[in-house]
Image 1 (spheres, rainbow, N blue to C red):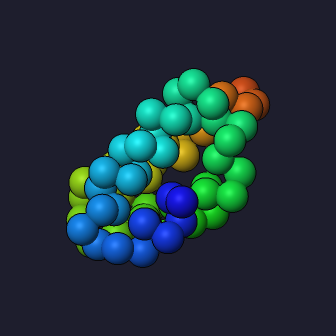
Image 2 (image 1 turned 90 degrees about the vertical axis):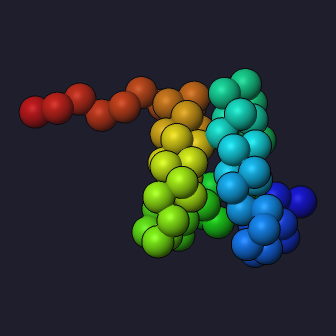
Length: 70
């Protein structure tokens, strides 16, 4: 459901927010959606970039620890 709606400009912001909220509680359900969010990291819209980074970060930290710095 997320993938089709992410293609529509009018709903991108709210759908990215929804992905982030879902990542907070069930990151494991987002396997199919995460690749569709990556392109938003380079969006001209700073709100979309931020929401994409937030959602991807939550999804990642919900699955594995962040890499340590050298």
